[in-house]
Length: 108
Image: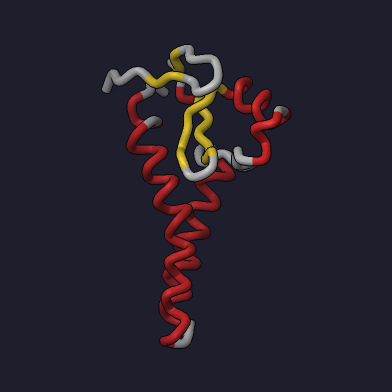
């Protein structure tokens, strides 16, 4: 799996998975170096850049929480409100997309 992944800010290649941070910019998943992500959060992009990275501990925890919430909501909610569980599926899709497109191509 040798697909090159490039940082959205500095355009340099990201070679180590620990240095990769994926986040949503408007509705697009973009890869960053860890330090480039921190710099962009302090800049004007912060209005559109998500404060929480998709990968890492917090992203994985939110991913699991979204799965549990979507499943529970399907069983507990009234029949007319079950469609709201689709909102819990959105972060699941972002996390899976982040893993399939970026993370699995970089060495640990």
